[in-house]
Structure formats: C-alpha cells, structure tokens
Length: 205
Image (cartoon, rainbow, N blue to C red; front, side):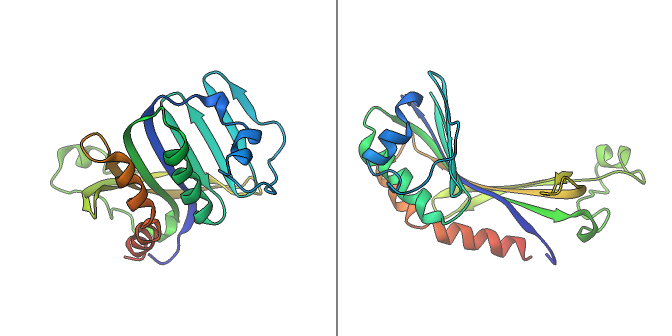
C-alpha cells in the first residue's frame, strides 16, 4: 500500500477476576509493572469497575473482565507489563488474548470498487457514485486466529482536520481456554515483534 499510518497498537487480556482499583500508580511501580521513574499523566480515573492510567508511553484500561494496554512508545514496555500480570496477579482465569494493530489509509489511495463484489446482490444495491466498501478476512497464523477488517471511516488529525480514510484493523486472537494459558501468553508475547512485522507486511501488499 503506497501510504498508511499507524493508528494504534495494543495488547488485550480477557479474563475473569480483574480488580480494577488494584491497578494504581503506587502499586504498579511498587510491583515493578512499570519503571519507578515513569511519569504518569495527571487525573487518572479509578472506580470499582473501571481504571484508566496514562503516560506518554502507554494508556492502560482495566475492567473486571479485561485489561487493555495501549502502546504509544516502545512495545517492550507492554510485553513486560503483561508478563508481570501473568506472574503477579494470581486470581485470574484467562479466556483470551489479542494483539491489535490499527492503520489508516487515505481514501485517495484506495481505488473505488477495490472491495466491491460484483456477483453479490447486496453490493450491487450499494453500487452508487458515493458508495464505499470494506472487507473482512480471517485465517490461522502461528498459534492465533488472524483477522483483518477494512472499514471506510473518517479520521481527525492533531490539528482537528477531518479526512476520509480506510481503517485497517488487524487482530491476532489467542484462545486461552483449552491450552496452558500462562505458557501461551508468555510464548506469544516473546514473538510480539513477529506479529507486528507481519502486520506491516500485510499493509505493504
């Protein structure tokens, strides 16, 4: 793809037993989830059902049934954080994990009708001058289920300017119910960069 920009990267854990208020700045630094000298942005949110803590390097969201670590800098901080969860939070029953990579592609880079299926009656019904089409693809990759969804949408840049883009959402889903969940999480995290590089390869097609 001629031009694309990364819109987000995150690691998500779905599990039973998260206690959101436990994930305070004090506890995260005390237990070495994050470096002690890492500055946390003001006004974190903490309620019995929801916690959000941010820095210039990450954004953390914790709910009773899931944890999401949004990476805004070095991915290694996210890998270390999730490994610490596995090693130090013993009350969790793991259900699934996801590696997620999001990209924006300018509308002008996508040929009109690229995702159009001419033999599909529903697509024919939407085949108008202002129509925009997307797609969904899925396959097995490594020990995950890889899916890519492409949706036409609008993006807002830092200056507040809105533009038409295609949102490429790449997800690697790891089912943890029928495997050694902790072993699968750790081994998959060790290959994070492989999943990232494959996502970049997909975006270059």
